[in-house]
Amino acid sequence: MTKREIEILRELARRKMEIAADPQNEINKKLWTDTNDLKMSIPPIYINEVCWNEMNVNDELTLQTDDPFCRELEDQMRKEIYSWNHFAGNMVVSPYMECPIVVTGDNFGISEDVDIIQTDSTSDVVSRHFHVQIKDEQDICKIKEPRVEIDREKTEQNFSRMQEIFDGVFPVKLTGRRGMWFTPWDNLIRWTGVEPVMYDLIERPEYIDALVSRFVDVSISLMEQYRKLKLWASNNLNQRVGSGGYGYTTALDAPDGLDTGADTRQLWGCGNAQIFSDVSEQMHWEFSLKHEIRWLKQFGLNYYGCCEPLHNKMRILEKIPNLRKVSVSPWCNIEVLRENAKGNYVLSCKPSPAVFATDTFDEQAARRAVRTILEQTRGCSLELIMKDISTVRYQPQKLWRWSEIAREEIDRMYR
Figure: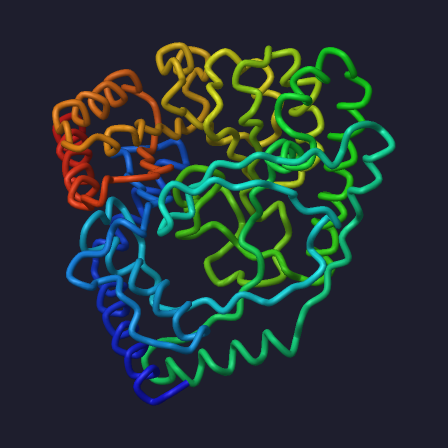
């Protein structure tokens, strides 16, 4: 690191601290807490999974450091500051930086073998063709039990460097794992392929049952190893939960400062089965959810779902212990879901990001989509989540304007 690089990072850190001191952070925190406690007054807005390669304006996202470690920190802070300036929604910005504990061995001994087609060289949104590595019961053993270890040398090196950079500006927190994206089928299809598995649900149910069971077995082993190493950390803060928004709640005994050594019952868990969008409720239960529950029951609160429509599957979702949030994807029938959810859950509502994919931004279409969601969820606790933004056609102002429109529509109905 050079003195110039350190000063660049320190200047960004000063701006981050100014934002963290804004009273709006406390207002936003309360909005999220009330919503997650099923006492929502105003729906909070959260925008993520942004096509950052298309968002740079006036060099706000242009990196000025060269050292790889510095560039990672710079990128993180620039994106956070940019988000606050242009599409904050109900962001909460923390007055510190986190230094994640470095771990090794937290994998299952098999990785995807994939062909990739990329239409935009600056984007990480790609099309994938997975090569099948698991074909039958004999191949299930390729999924290995993890052997998790803390890389203490690398962790200490990172922590020391961050303390040196940010000394006197803001604190650095050494942190563990703030929850985990648990979704067996998002992983399994990378090893089995999608189409073969769809046939196997009918033709080889015993094989599919054994396959999912094995994945959950090794996942629970990973969970326990994290617990023994005191690597779990609270996600009852400005941490995304599942495919939704922040995890602030009074329902978990997990203070913001619980950065290591948490029990999973002090955390939010999550699950989903996105490829089961058109699979029956019974099959969803038999070949995913009944297995996922072995993981989900370990957590104090749970979020379920992502892109799959869940409006006709509430009977099985009700079996999830401590279920608090349900994903409402653009393909959901909101009115049916609202009726079936019976006011017992936060509805994590996601307008379609396709509104950004046209050359000209149709503001009225964007407004109608938000207004429809708000009208159809009247009387429910909900959060408004804009995600999966693959493109804005290099017009970032579309997303900025959408954030304003969403706020206008919420204000129109709730204030």
